[in-house]
Image (cartoon, rainbow, N blue to C red; front, side, top):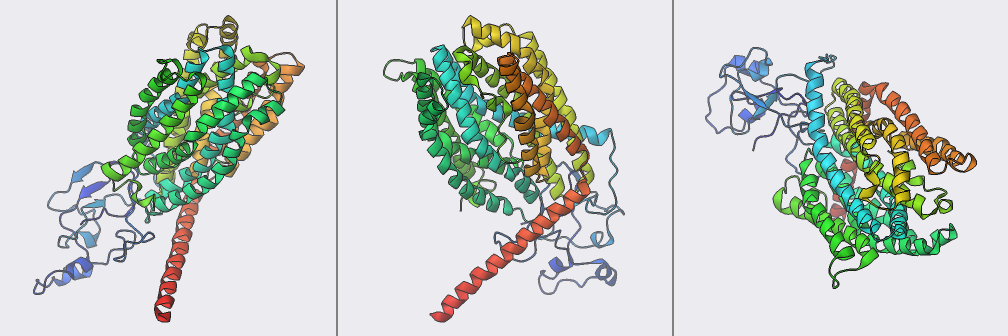
Length: 573
């Protein structure tokens, strides 16, 4: 079996098929009686370095393996006469069954700085980012549709039902889903660089560890959700809305473990370049979720459950996504699947969700309006968030390949692309603002309030996009704590206090809360962009190398300890 040449590369045409190259140690494996090499050949033949082929015959978890490329490459056939630009030890060696098929024509692990062509390389990186982003956007948009379908189904029951469903959804987001995403976001740093490193099996190891951590984190979340009604009543919510919201959380908790598993498995697949796998799965489940919402909320009498049908449909859909991920990994793509998996921050509590501060004073109509605005803003947020995931994976791959200049280019380009996505969302909200609320509710008060606030939502799209993408860049650098401090300061120091002051001290009402959100996003977007643009990427490469080496060293110590225990047991027997 031939291995890919291990030298890192990210250009799409950096490889050629090698037909006349074999290492010195490969020649030693040939049958006795093989012709003795000429003296000139032996002068040039050298032993392949550790970076080129995985050393050792073991296939253990922490055995170094060949580095992957970060993007599928196109290959060019090398003529029978190898170009003179190849290293001397590659020109005249004899090929055999152990010969690597691919070698880099451009050695990227050189200390010589890589010059970035502002035309060709920018276009290549843009094409890669867009190709990464589109399936991720589809995945997150369809995944978010699991919640949107519930809001739409409940919204046409009554205004109180919409308010309770919104309260339940946002409570689940703040106390559960955002915590899960916050912990899972650490994998955005670890997995992509591990996959393109010498030791890609660390991908499965870190995914296993995160599964254990996540299982522990779910325990207090369940405790909060099953006592949500009492907590909401203590916060002086209306009794009927608190009762329905608590009921919503109890039923949606059925899907919480599956949601946590999906957050890990999605990053596990995406770190390996399998961006379309989660998209294909959610593409099947999302229409089924819409059907279940109709069936369980509005369907025939034997199936109609009313209000509780919506959270139950969402929970069923989350479990179906988990089941499909396992089936795919085991049966359809085992080499990238769950075989190695099974055996930015602190949670980013979005100010849009936390803007529910004080809603108990502004009535069901304002709460229903808040629901429409939050769902709308969160839906458009999926585009820059998908771009942030793509940028995080791409930058992580490039750092694992030790390509600092290309990582810097990718960070800059992702910021520019976020502006384009935000412009589309902004134009859509402004154009449809008068009729937008009718998708969710027909109450004229709600429709009028939504139409008056949507221009504010359109305004902050640019900064929301910048904030999302810079969060991805920070995750790729392993700066989750920095991202957490930025978000906490933006929302809880700047946005929420200012919004509450406008809403209740200056009588701006619901408008004031959204003005506060806009200010917080302007702050986090601008500061995050500054952090991304001033990054020392060469230093980030060194950090990745040190992290991977320390993990491999820890694994070696652990493996030696296990072997020593087995030896001691054998001696005692």
